[in-house]
Length: 275
Ligand SMILES: C[S@@+](CC[C@H](N)C(=O)[O-])C[C@H]1O[C@@H](n2cnc3c(N)ncnc32)[C@H](O)[C@@H]1O
Image (cartoon, rainbow, N blue to C red; front, side, top):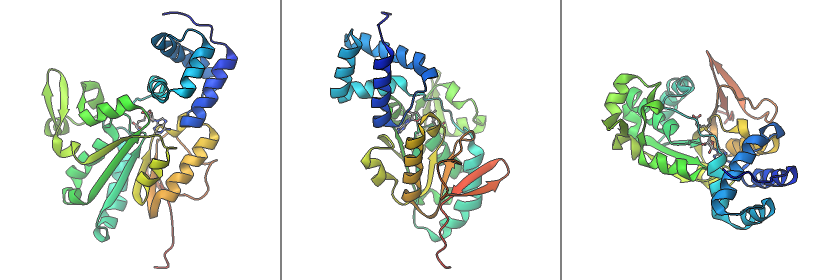
């Protein structure tokens, strides 16, 4: 691979540009990673000077998407941190669903789809009678991940934490690939969107549950605050937010009420309707 003369000033400009567009923030200790990824794109686009590449990036929407696809960290797998979803289903949804005609769940930063698909599988397993009430949407800024999610074909590594019985029930194995059953696939609508795209606000509106797991950890403080505020405003009264286990919104929000269960915290938009 060609080594480019990427200086601090250019890196900083790309960082600010990306931050405004995506909310993703690179600390200086992450500059080596940023540098490698920009170099990959410089080589691919044959823009051999940092200035030339930066100008190209600024005016070419497609290039920005390609750089974002290169930069995002997409680690995910079926049934990851599933205990928080489990608690939500058992303690909240099972009871709330009696009085609801539809249940809207949105997975934000869904990567290649394992998270929203795991929810569908869990609902099928535990509360199959809720199937017709489910409206599940999922979004990610990375276009390649959304394409993969829509295909619903996975390697064994994605299924490593899933019970063997469930793998057999919901996947067909073909040449070491696992093809997701269409009963699950057709329930989820995927969107290639950033959290900060105005269309996301429309998509999230009136959600009963928003999952944003292992996404905010890559954000700067201001973006984190804006994202959490958006989630709060988008939820129905007494709706819930689920974050990743290692995430906290302690210093960015004081509106959500933390509801504690063993090993699980749910964030509630508590609204007293006087009832
Ligand atoms: C580490 S993965 C987490 C996947 C899944 N939520 C989980 O916990 O297994 C983080 C995902 O967030 C996405 N992401 C990062 N910034 C985003 C943004 N501004 N809008 C939407 N998705 C974003 C990345 O593309 C990546 O796929």
